[in-house]
Image (cartoon, rainbow, N blue to C red; front, side, top):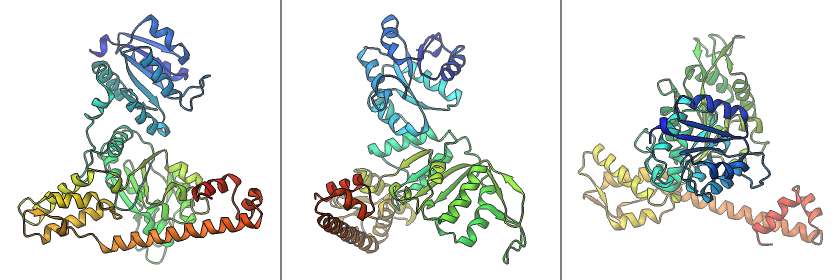
Length: 452
């Protein structure tokens, strides 16, 4: 079906959204119906059928489901409508929107959208309305960036889909994940699929910058601003102007550095050291860290206002051990890469090697797998890698064991402390929580955690 012959229903409690979409689609489709109240969906669908339905994910309605989008999506399916449903969502609900695909939605669009992209999405929905969202999801292209961004697992498919959706926007993105999971590759993929793809992509490991170098490196300096400033220098913000700035290891910067960074992001301008002249900047900001969000939420370590500023959209990169058969996909890829690099015939994995890879926990993630395969290919005198050829880094293994020991020890200390304080107060939870410096709720969580 062509877009010109399609009928479209738009359901959103924001009148401005309804007006904007109606004006945009009027010359493009056969018929447009708008509705502010989702509780009228049943009566509307009883009177006529539609090819495409645009459905908001959040309403201020009498239905209290936590997220009305899922409720009304399921209702549309109950009403036997064969329309393709496109969810309308904000940046913060992208994870929920991806979940809606699994529940039968055709696709989703992110507010604010690019008009051309919205029209193309509706045209695809009208054309493919009888296909399932699951089959369509398989057709989504992976981001085109270094071939190491590989994965068929469900968690990686969700990440690829999220990249495709958020890349064309200018939303600030925070990428979370353990060391070696490929956070930098995801940042590059977002840039290369963005509207700034032909502009600069500047990466800075801010966690490695000292207090004295932080401002000079990021904001630039004037000749003579300090002892070693022998010439004028652009900072990384100015170098990334009109492009993308990727701040890696953002979780490791000090509170002083955070304050400086927040000022620049709020004002969208930098002032080079040694000058008083602010310079406007236009960047797409991507940040990454291996620090868990629970630790970032601790205001003694990281400013909450800065988290909100950098975390419009969050992407959590799973550790390799949670990606199933992706391990073998990546291992085969690295076998080809290093066979070519070291001028060897194509080396493959035998069943024993595959079994060993699938049962190893990979504390160093993809990076550890890459180095293990490279080492095995270099040392191999055969065209097949066997289990005994795969040696994992003792550095990673020792680190993982040490971390596990520390974690176990800390847990034991916390549990014993809680038991001792509760016993001291004869089981009075309020008094125990007060002495421990935590809330009653937090104490109950710990009691459940340790089965006390």
